[in-house]
Length: 398
Image (cartoon, rainbow, N blue to C red; front, side):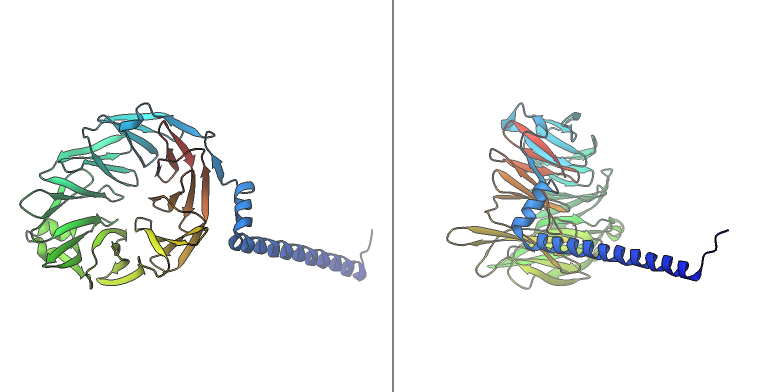
């Protein structure tokens, strides 16, 4: 029998500690290298472009993707929602999946549609007329002909709908419906014009933006109605739980619920947060030395603006994403003029002409698409995007 002495145990312990020390040093060196590379990636544009292209494989090009052929390219409209890209033409709505395969065909009778999408829902209506459809997935949930001319429509993530109507004895009418098409209540505006409306994600509140004029003064207001109280009370004025009036002559353009009690509103000169009846400016749409070329409040929990700065030989466009809760700002910069911007929940698409940058609210590039021709339009849902050309739609997984 072999007897192991104290010296042998000490030697083994020393060797084990040495191995642990070496392993710790190696892990520390790797961590330092990773942190250094991340810092360089975030701070050096050329290095970031190289990593995005050759390591993370974020670059995609035309003709290497699934596509949909457009047989009648001149008279179509293209939408994206749920897991579909849909093409509307000649009273037909045809849906395709991410592989470019046809999934459904629906009869939708109208000539000049306007739409809103949210989650699995597509709301489509005849602009300036009466007909409206709510579509969920690949089927029509309900359709109606309303009393008035449809000017604006909104659907929340649960399929609850608000519609602004004109062309009646009132200046504006706002009708609300549940996800089965049952009318919840109607609001009549006799002295103001409704600009936009939205229903909260928990279906408890309707908020709407209105403008009224007194001589040469334009007054913007945002009002919030309790839907449950509106169903029970005949006088809708008694159900208004918040009434916020703009302190300037700014014109309210649109609004969006970020959650049950947080409302983001865009005026012609600024973006505001309305919460618990208080009004806070998030950022201005007028900046000295730079031009605000685009702004939007449709992202989930973010608002953003795009600033354009011109020099003698170049143009720099900066996207600023602001988290409406923390007020933290994330930035993405591109050395080009941005021609068009498209928005979908957590992502925006920047159309530069023959290049498209898909950028997340964290300020990081998601995908870069390069084409040999001008991109006509971009549509997006939460899974993929459609790059629309005259004769085809190319599909990019996001």
